[in-house]
Image (tube, rainbow, N blue to C red; front, top):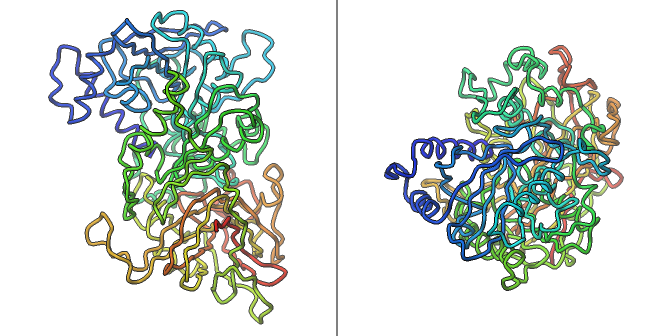
Length: 632
């Protein structure tokens, strides 16, 4: 989705670059034309290079209401994705988190972060926070924001002295950083799908497993050298030579070949990925969670249950503030959205799944705008709950005074060696395990589609294509006699053995529709009977089962526990449905191939890749299961 949004921005920018204040807007479609005209009529645009404490200047695009009879709060978005269009006579087609903010009356500011596009300085991806700054050269994203706000307050005469920040994805990370050692004028911040930990769960890795497809595609542009300020975006790799990503990445071979054949060692961020295989200080220093202390602005953290990139970030950011800064006004919103989906679309459908309401407009008006209006304009308190959660399956918004809900209880969904899944623990039986052969040369695909761009469809795609494979174990419950509602963390706890010395384990928690389910898909002709909706799916690289910092080989044929965080979910498995769990050892090319041999995978050769037999155990002493939180 990150790539989809960037494409939309590129198209929009190309239109605007050709559209000055005296040109026709006829080529701009519908609502965008109306919004663009509104902005030009009601806003003036300024472009400034704002000096930081170390002398580096950051390019900043400022939209100020033309009506100078009022004072306005400032909304600031710091981004590595460009503040385009550039030029004071060239305007964005939409302003703020939504156009509601532009029409409400806000000073809206966008800034190219240090080292990106037209800003000076050196870019450092997910730059570490410096807790004890002793000299002017001790700069980070927190200090750059502080200096920016200080300049804006002194140089924009119609500001009311209050500032809010927001951003989605990487800009969500920068938003989180604005709240650490915040400027006193910063009263409210909304990190949305914030990048929070590139090793544990966001974008680049999940539980130590490398997310190959999205990382290569994204970093081919994002990590490209930028020797001097520019308005241009580095081109993204497109020479796949095939419409099939599975074929492309399989033909590349071991992951080291990407640098040898394509990137040639010139992509700094890719090189950092390849040089830091475990959770070392490089990664630990880059997560803001340990620094979320004494947070003074009110925080509205936002995420989507079907976010293909940053589901981890909003959950851990909210939890980190709850733990480390308990006096902060801290709120969580989770809706039925893909990455950034809450910001523009109706949010009533995803693929074949309907949500029975326009969740996007509801969020933008009743939650987001109301939150900022209260904290920045002194308007009525919207009385937001601690956690505003959309429960999929039942398709209702739930309000909780804590997350996870206090009324939820941990329960285990146990695997049974006959393929059954239930809340009853396994008993002693002659058969104690299910097994499958995992072959890296015939990896399980992450989607049934032929595509080169990862997209988000795999997050809500029918999983029957995987269930039929011999290298995917399937555990299925009886037909549910009543609704089963889960809200909170999902954990996989496997007891496994392998003939190799390393392995990946992918666990998918799935809602199986009844055979007579109504054909209510928004996609014409789709039969929903037996549909398998992935509620949550996650991967674990077993070498990190004991420590993400100190990988350890599996002992061949020894039963070991592999336990991992699958992130949170809020879903109602309805009466008449079934609950399913699928277990597999590849998810390609979403995740890179594990050689199933204990090696540094980023330096592995083709000869290191081997077949391995994996067993998943279901006994009273080795009860593989998925832990969920059930709401009664």
